[in-house]
Length: 223
View (cartoon, rainbow, N blue to C red):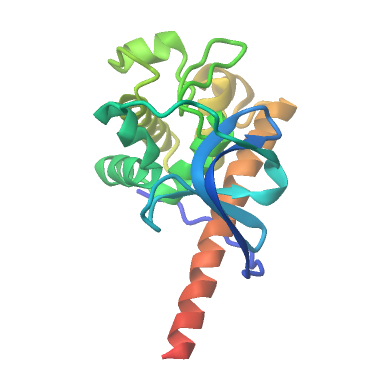
């Protein structure tokens, strides 16, 4: 069951591309390691590997600066390599639980800024910011394991969407503020943080869908 979200048209254009291993420092303090970046319209693609398919899209305005990645080269375990292929991770979780990977990407972006080791002041951990009790209930032993975290977070989000009959704003509000608060207020709680959170995810998701539609039209007209 998916809820169709209305999309707003945006301008899509190619701009500059830069390369070399570096860190993107976000406005919220999170950092994302990547090999190169490319500005596409109002977003920046952070390529996490050699493949052109392995990238994370971040609104350019949310990137405060770039810094060289001075970490020494070390042998990377297979589990660490997996976390770099964020697109594959989200596609797998989306296919397994029936959610659009682009929607999951927007949620992960809002939750952790794609930082696998993110920890909130309240103790939520990992990409989808699982609270310790929630992680335990979902059978997650290590919230910093990207695959386990995303799978559990996606499973929980799927359950919330089913609970609210596909009502995306209400499900997102419950993910952010809790099911009890949504029940208490009969919908999205009157918290500025929660309202901003829900609006941000839906806006980013709509932007991605609009960009895809625009790109598809351009390709069709060029044939």
